[in-house]
Length: 354
Image (cartoon, rainbow, N blue to C red; front, side):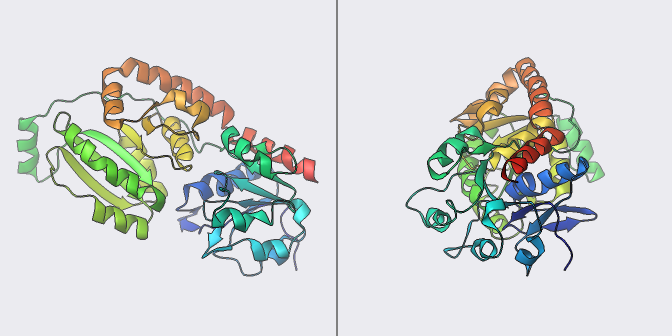
């Protein structure tokens, strides 16, 4: 058997390939498993990402690894049984780190599934200080915080601006057989199954706002139950005010949507939204978000509150402030979430448990 890689990141989420690119429909798997591995490889380290969905004898492949990071991926259970239990039984627990984007709540099946592993593993890591504080009572040593790396190059910051509807342009477009709805404000939501309910709940509010400011809402969701539920829950009851488009998430679709939208919507308090917020800000797009403890410092660069319709109005009426926040955001993300900086943070943690 060949020796395993030095540093291993494992997720319970599936991987997919789009051309030469390997990614995942799970935002957490992208940001906490695949992205750190790419950053470590860029610095010359021997690192690899694994998905439990594709590996049969993963424990055997990892026995020679120096450190193993088991990513929470918000999917720590498999019908009540912790999906990493069998893997932990086959590797040395003293070189295993459990990584969390949200702390398991005491009294839940998810917490009970993890409880037996907490005293055995080398340590716990977290995506934010907020999660680290919640994990603190469960850890036998201080919880290490490691940021999520951004991807690619920064986009040009752009503020959303009101547009006027042009009947003449619509008439010409109709004659040519093409769509012409550039006068609509372009909103983007990218999510997963656990966030579908929040965007469905928000839709009536957007329809009311759309009677004042015509809107186009583009929704990207992983193919499967989340996308099906979204298609069933969202209806174009008033297409003149709110025009909907729903499509399966992919890296290309996500990149195109970020490049062409005016504003990004982050309804609810899903922990994965922190990754979405980093992506939006790095792409130069302003985000309108519900209050969430998972944003931490990133929240100051977005509009954060309870009424997202009010946040959209605010963004439209404060374009200079929007651009100023985006400029500060890209400076912050470029420093704190730089892949090289994140990779070095992981290496420091690995050295502590070596």
